[in-house]
Length: 370
Length: 255
Image (cartoon, helix red, strand yellow):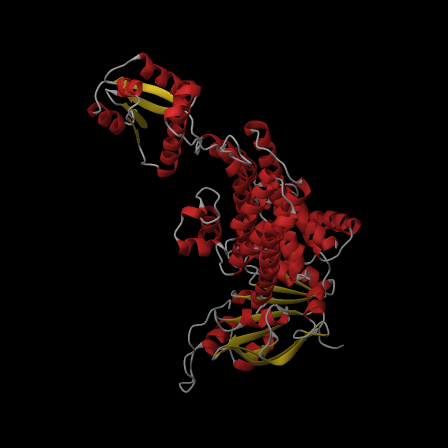
């Protein structure tokens, strides 16, 4: 056991000496949270709205007022003709336009269906659809409140009431923080393990370890445990930052989430070991981790891109991606506050995968001796 | 006294290629044994079998009385090893490297401290003990690497081309360290490219094409073959004088 302790001690020295790597390991999660939190937002907020109002009246002004008072829309231009809208869309000045018919007030007064046109820039389809739905909702509300108890009598209006659960304000930070944990754990566990193992191969020190009485599992534990600790620290950092800066809720059990994180870290570590067993240079190991571990876990885990809108083939493929299951678990625990009674299937999959991969990686280490 | 290294018909094949072909030799305790051969002659493969990194395909070998095929753990405990590739951690200081390897070989902290001081004193390296190894000149690093390979006082130490790329003065100092270890009873098996170093060994073997072409004390070998230097003998043996023996395919030195 003293041998193992020495090895752990040494790895800790590596992490401390190599200040650049250490800085990356600590700064990366912190910066990621800020980046994802502020840059990649799918929240409906501050939508740039253009108004086409050929014949402004008190009614149309009230409608405009209503839209801006929701705090979501910002009117960037009011133009008299619909032709002017194209220019605004092309320059990116407006993301959405509300075209009010010139006879709008008149028609409304006579009880004839009044015409409104909502045009949305759908270059980004997801946010486009959201803006559209939001605008429709606001107008609907305005119409209902205007009609009042008497006005509603001439039309049977069904007003759907919508309740958004678990993330009522639809904060995208609530969505990305659990995913970000998976991302950070993958980087620290898979990438750092693969790099630190191949570095020892490159420098020749791996041979010295293999010739020593250390057993393969001791070498693996000694190399990998420090990164497990760093990975864990990163997860805590992400959680604390998410809580303090973005007020992401934590409704479930912290212990359960940490246990699940360990399982996921084991999967990533095993990936790192397997990749390092098949490569002999740090550069190739890095590429290997990016292609086989990082990219699939980012793209196919539902971390940023919703799985539901992917082609069936990719959805099927996503079932083998460990990140998908971990993201589901982390979201379930943090946002829904659910426990193992709902998450046992996901947990079982990750635990099974961790076992299989760890056995395979220790075996690959044995084969290296041949 | 029984030999500390005893190889009998030791063989290693990679597919259809035979890297080490039925070699037999023994090394007695305290001997400095030189393992010579051209690149690809099979030296490294043979050593890797002796230190338990590679399973033999045939024959047998005992190191410190343990069978390398079945008792690799015990073999590893009894030996020290320094490869042609540098084996110290460059971002650690000499003191930390000694502590690491001492710990790996099961020394207590008190033993490590005591031996570190003794070793640094012997090398005259006390003033560089706390600088990262990466900043030290190559000669220093090689000497430190050898000392670290000896830190657990192994019965046998395997040195795989320890002096390649080192200047002549450092090489000489390095050999003084080897003699010192031998005088304390450590058996040394060393491979080298430098034929002048062969003269420093008690006995040498010259490997050609996976087989041992000559073995014995340098002086005896020179006399028996009627040559002036080991260099001459080496060239004579390595030259494919016998047209019936096919030229071997080029082989990886490190499989």
